[in-house]
Image (cartoon, rainbow, N blue to C red; front, side):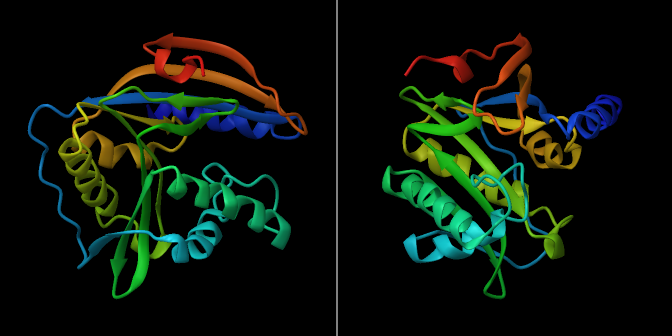
Length: 220
């Protein structure tokens, strides 16, 4: 994975003037068995976000272009547009989990049960019994403390209580650190997709796909 990450990182930087190169990895996990334990390395509590948290959540995501739902720099107008997208998630029943350390947000993560933002122009459309976890963000001051796995385990346990039997998530090859929490909880890679989105355009070019990626291309 490290060599692939280096290659993708170089290609990403080389093509940046012309658009966005993405090498995404689809992972899956059955929820029928036991979930491994996952403890945080700092005192932390978990709660669900509410509408009043959306302004803060939008601002936190704006620091990460890959996760951020807005397009372009976080101007007031851009933030307002992105805010509505995050708020729409709550309105349609998706859940945002917050890990708090001394009242400060240390980690943000989402569970989607209807559909979730995945590839450009290709949301993952979920069937009954499926959940998609997405947009895991650990704030810089709290990285390396196991918060991703700690929160993700709680999310999967909650999804199982709701009747979900299978989970999906999407990772990016050049962000190998994000795979540590997934590996700890038994996720397995089931497919890979490479795409290119030209700068200033909404369409994307699917360059390559491998394995089980059907959930990313289900019809509306």
